[in-house]
Length: 263
Image (tube, rainbow, N blue to C red; front, side):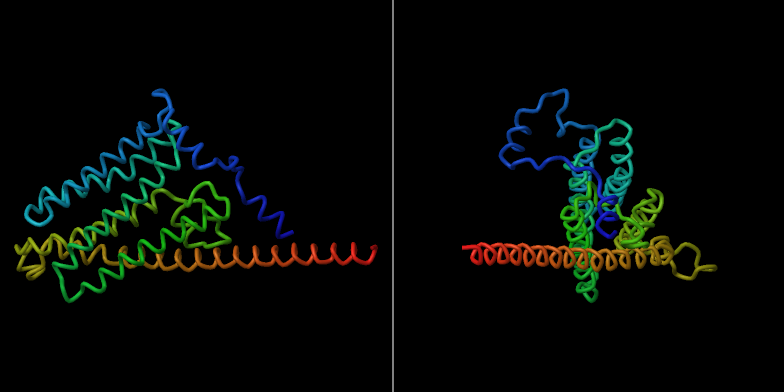
């Protein structure tokens, strides 16, 4: 019963392609179907360029930095929609999207570590959690035959299912988390209070940081859950493979024993 349920969960997967064959296919691809030139991937390259420019301006021009960083993050919601609308979904695009997200956020956290030295270890911990949870989640998806790391069923994790199943929830949480970090960045540059009479010496970045802090906490709780669930999936796969190896060894031993008795 468990086996049939697990089989139903899995989606049809393509036959494995040899690495050399994959390289040859990518080298010989035609212009009409060049995955590197898919519209969502072109959007991905634009994100990378804008994120790189935001890092260039980060230490001395907060306006340019914030605009470039913000647009780069907002384009994250566009490439997926373009991929589905144009029928140009690809594994390369999915990985490019995730790597861009992880690297962009990590670079901003590195700057915040230098801007807030007493909290550097916390920013470093956030980088480690973000990378480890997404890497292990991606890898656990691959070894269980999933076609996408976003295909999480509610019986595996209801929290992750709610997070990945609704694109609006995904965008809201990710955008709120990034906005919290951007506000921390802008707090180093903005000292003008909103209204001393009503809000004391609170600035706009400080106010937005307070408002987005719960979303930041939620995002990192999701990261912890994602890391834990991925760890359990990988351990479960290990246990299943070890049990299968023991059964195969036992069957081989039983076969040898029967041959010996007959002889």
